[in-house]
Image (cartoon, rainbow, N blue to C red; front, top):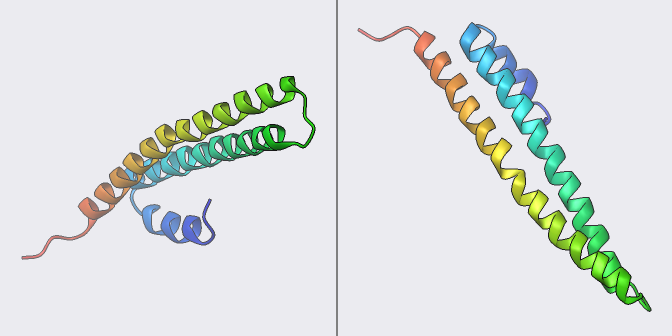
Length: 104
């Protein structure tokens, strides 16, 4: 979670049950996307290291290319839960705004 985001928005959305529900789903999806992206980044970096390791055997370079491409694919895969999380955040905002008093 982003520093400060959770406490401030959770306090804001907790006043409305539906908004709190969608915000909790947003946090879960966002955390999932962060974990997937980190896994992809580490895999990509390991692959990059194997590709450029001095005096590496052909097998290590091949493994490095596979890990590099796999890590990039995993990082791209993190976009799906991130998008789902953004949709949940939009729903939380909608429910919160719906609870506000209307003008005359």
